[in-house]
Length: 115
Image (cartoon, rainbow, N blue to C red; front, top):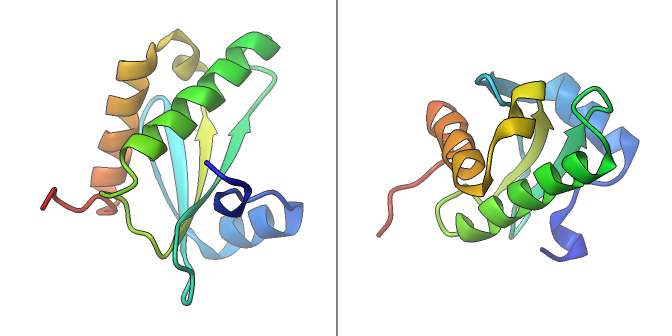
């Protein structure tokens, strides 16, 4: 993931929280905000200190980034995504994390079928 694909500024996070829609399961909360004129999706990640130590939090963020990288052709490109990891996400391995993210995105109708 390159820097253009990340939501970094607090104001951008707040705008997505305020104006976007949210979908959740036990491991993740996903906020979505459509962005017109944007050629590729952007993601912002939030993992609370309550989830685990720094190693665990960084591992969760790596899992989420890699999952989005693998699903980049399936996700809606004209969106900003903010993913918040809940405590249960700390116990997941990569494949479980990806499956859980896919579940939330299917509920949100953001995954397109493979062509």
